[in-house]
Image (tube, rainbow, N blue to C red; front, side):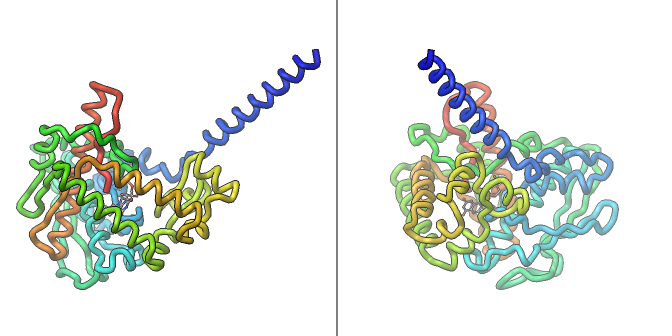
Length: 337
Ligand SMILES: Cc1cc2nc3c(=O)[nH]c(=O)nc-3n(C[C@H](O)[C@H](O)[C@H](O)COP(=O)(O)O)c2cc1C
């Protein structure tokens, strides 16, 4: 009798523990930070709001979301860079920030087609700022109603796109048709190429790993990332930008004191080494690369590279979704930046 009772109480303690873990996991989703994905497309009466609701879902470095948009007239907007949201240590010339702003305007342009508009984008209407971005506008945006415009097929993939931070399956090679579809996104301003030759891919993989090590072991560049880490749901909800370390596992580690900004900052600490192992697996797990090359190394070329990268990112998302509808197994093809 006693043994039965013991077994029963052990089982129910287990149940409580499992229920507790599940309940914990269920409450870790940062719902407020995810609101923009639910809001995109709700404003049907003002096309400017409609396009910007989509544009804010753009990929951008360290998720800094460095955009400021002013609605200047019923169908025009001005885009600026929020200069306080740049990354001076890892991006001293604001190239990456500008690529993110190119992604932003391309998403706006794609969203415009879904409500019957073309988006005319005039980059740097008051001149190209060098060597860093300044208070001049990044672009003027004008919505032009056009009955002939058809919704861009990439529009359907905006909410499914993400920058993957998982190792890919090295056994899966890039389908030739996918390489062709991606290369077809090339324009005179930016050429898209996929690289899958194993020897070349191996050399680039080594370079990315070496580069990761240099950035992570250089205090000022590493701290730029550490300072932007948002650990756990509360921090993510409070500042829904930066690098989110969320989910039940990471948050659990933080609660038991095994994951903190101080530990991540210290090269060689267990938390640093865990992050290093994660990136090593991710960078090693790359079977192919995609490059976007802009012949113009100035601001216009960099901006165009961002616009083209965004299209490639959405096109890869669509290719993967097509594949998943045929076969639910395998590792996604979406792009990792
Ligand atoms: C120009 C640019 C540079 C980026 N650099 C990195 C990087 O060095 N490491 C990384 O993990 N992600 C990088 N990203 C991806 C961003 O972290 C990601 O876009 C951002 O967190 C938003 O997430 P999402 O793309 O999944 O919506 C970069 C993105 C852009 C556009």
